[in-house]
Image 1 (cartoon, helix red, strand yellow):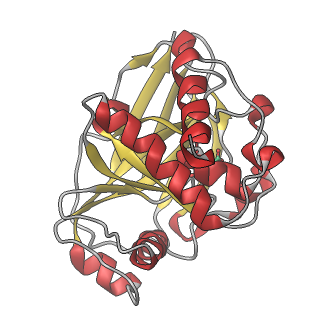
Image 2: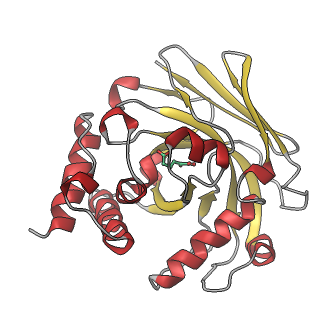
Image 3: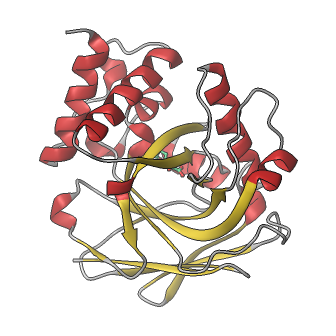
Length: 256
Ligand code: OOG
């Protein structure tokens, strides 16, 4: 068994068994390409269990997120249908390791985007709708502690996500679009769209251009989560988290 397969199996078992593992960089993971190969294998295992690829997600695209995790470079992951929950759902915390939740702007693509050279304008032209999203991240590493390569291999800590019920064409200025994150009705974080790489569509362009290097692309119909606008907050039993994004509506998840 190659290192890539063994590392992907280790992360997959950590997720399915809710038992965190030590970072792969401590076990010789070296190089961005190998880390994305582990990610691809991890996603392949989910697809082999009958899941469907529905899009992508960015990670570590805002200073707030980079500071919170001590990692200063963005990365991307892939999201499957099994990760999607309707807004208003309650998650069972015993099915997760140590989940945290963060607000994001999601893009629903009407056309495929293939790098290199994809710009913010290209992303906006290819986008059919934007909507608010909550991204539940659940690092498979002990103590939620990792390096950039570990998080790439772990598919950007992806676990569960929810989209708001309203889908809006991308006509407003997303740099100035405000976001408020509430836990049990109390505001805990806030940000403007520009917090994500100066413009959330720049994060989508980054993913398309990175995929282009690996002869992959963002497909028409995919949803792309552009990365946490704020620092993440822990998801606690009995808690309800709501993200409201100006002009786009809101999205809620609870935990039990
Ligand atoms: C890795 C990336 C998570 C984001 O938006 O920053 C992410 C992590 O922080 O666990 O999706």
